[in-house]
Every structure is written in structure tokens, then in C-alpha cells.
Image 1 (cartoon, rainbow, N blue to C red):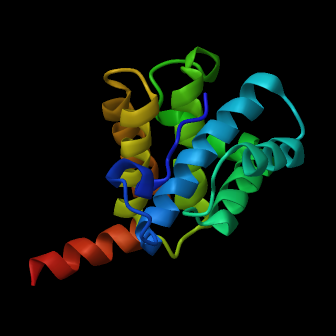
Image 2: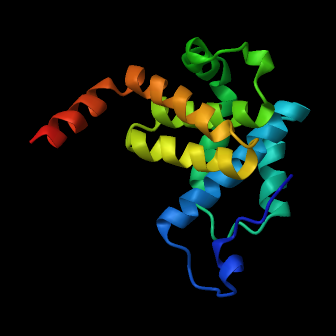
Length: 165
């Protein structure tokens, strides 16, 4: 399931990736690694090592990849409980890719508050577009938007107040 996410390969150039591109690459690898962890149940350190060996991560924010992967694995029950109230189906009925994307988005909304909520949602929607079913990005967007309203209420209010001025 791994997909080449090295931004330089698509352009045929070997320029250094921007920080944004490196973080996006980390999230793409993370969704694949979380998916592998969910499906195979391997220890997270083995999955992380496998991804580092099997993929060119030179254009990837490896620290972010590791933080997301380990954070999702160690907080998966908390993350599932956070977004579950907004689902229209049971957790077990979620597509495994959607679940991996929801867990990553939930992790970033709850544990990486330095990342603006809109960035978290947009990045998660992009992951769902790349890896998920045809319409899953809309579902992911709706669920994470509702979660953001609960866990990032202060940030959202401040943004709305700033837009009124």
C-alpha cells in the first residue's frame, strides 16, 4: 500500500522540499503506517522501522511522521471516543482508511494545538482524497469539523471574531 510521496519525483527535479511539503509527506506516510498497524497489529516500532527502510523519506519530516504514528497508536481509544459521537455508523463499520485518517486528524486536533484547526482538517481531507473512497473526503471533513468545534472552540471563536472586524 505504500505510495511514493516524494514531492521531487513528480516534477523530475531534486530540489529540497519545503517544510509544508515535508509535513504533507509525513502525513501521507503516517496514514499508510497507521493503516498497516490497524490491519496487521504489528508493534508500532516495527512498522515505523519498516517504513523508514522501505521508503525514501529524505523529503519527509521524519519527526512528524514518528510523532503522528506513535501518538495515534498510543491514544487510539481516546481518539476514537473523541470523533465517535459524530459518526453515522459504528466504529467497526468505518472503512479502515477513513478510520486511519480520522485518527490522524483527531490526534492533530487534540494533541498538536500549534497546528491551526483548518490546516488539520484540510490535510486530513487531502489524505482522504488520495487514499480513501470516492466520497470519503466529504465524510472526513464533516466529522473533523464537528470535532474541531468541540476541541478547538477557543481558536474557532477567535477566528470568527477576527473575521467580523
